[in-house]
Length: 290
Image (tube, rainbow, N blue to C red):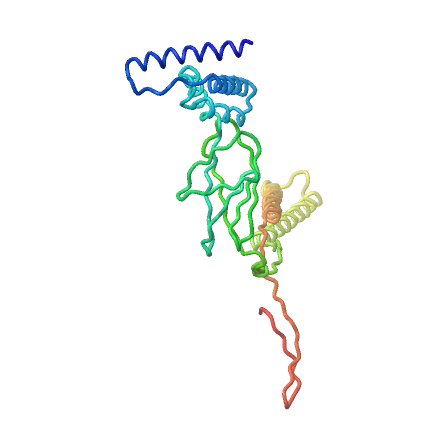
């Protein structure tokens, strides 16, 4: 009853507005009928409810209906404002297609509905949520994509590149060259190891010499040995300690350079044996990389 009363009120108001305009302009259109106004009111209500429920497809249909020129001005104003709001909410797609060598036309099926792609690319308005896209360009193989669009997402770029035609044999990629990885011992490790061995050998020789000299001194002149004898023994012990320390440094560097040695990759040389015949002899052939 409320809706009928509202329709009658709007119809009456529309009639008064039309009569007033007719008084000013003798060729103004006749007022809208009650059935037309009732349809406008119904579309207006559907658009409002669809907006609250975020049913964008139903809202778009209802808004387009209540924006008709046959609807009263108050209803058209509301629906025009809702149409602007809907334009801001609905996302858009921007399709970029590489058509391949054939240059065949491309057809887009958006959720099963065929859409003509403009040249140059123009935004395609759709609804928020998940969508399924299928691109067709015979004789090339079709391409399918799935995506999800948020409310208000504008100019979401979808790039499509067509490959080989249907039934075409895939291109054969060149065979990978076999390689072998190794970690050879660097020359720096060898040199440092040799230096460490030489330093340890020198330290050992000096220590043995100092101990031998001290044993001789104890046997011949202890405890009143000359100062030069004691100095010679202490010097050899000091040099032995220094040589031992140098050996430790060289050994540490040798271990470091060995652990940090780089990985070297080299091609594996393949040799394929074969047999060749001619009218005079049998020959054995070996083919490959050398």
